[in-house]
Amino acid sequence: MKNLLLTGGSKGLGLEILKTFLLNGWNVYNISRSKPNIEHPNLFHKQFDLTHTNSVKNEIFKKFVTNNIPIHAVVHNAAIAYDDIVTNAKFESLNRMYSLNVMTPIMMNRECIRNMIFNKIQGSIVFISSISSQTGYKGLSMYASTKGALQSHSKNIAREWGSKGIRSNCVVPGFMETDMSSGLSGDHKNRIYNRNSLKKATDLNSVAETVYFLCSEKSKSITGQNINVDCGTI
Image (cartoon, rainbow, N blue to C red; front, side, top):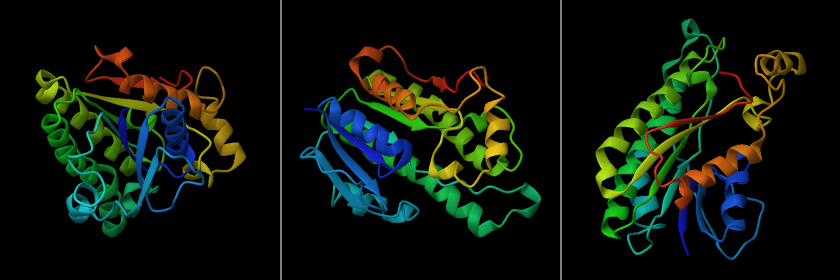
């Protein structure tokens, strides 16, 4: 049985990803601040605030997923969006967002790749990015910069570790109906959706199935890519 390490799997897209992997027979090791509202014998949960980057090695890789548990795939889904125009930027909020969205995934990858090499696993790393990294939205310049950083990181670790059979890709969703977008008005959402070809929100299951595909053997020749699932926004 294969093992997935997932961040932010308690709600929204993360929960959809969690369910998709469970349905396909994987063990899921989820890390989030709240527990998913689901019981399953193959689901293991650790409550942890991923903004505490300095504690990642000890709390996750010594107390939760050690090298005795081979990691076949890791999905970096957890993120926070600090929405504002850059002239209003507050260092504390920006630093917290970068800690969770960028620094923690990088430090987790250090340990995950070591785990894969130790266990002789040709694993898959998937980042959840955002369409805002590729097209402009007012108020999202700071958030989009974190997702752009992940895309650059992903492409380069694909080069670094491809010789070991370790792959890295980004899934780039369009705007979805999640807690992160719940603060937008109906009119604002409609204006966003009207920018894409299908004139609607991106489906969570479609994104989750793409993530699963990139972690499966069916995508064994795909690495270093940004896969858009955005209803034709780009």
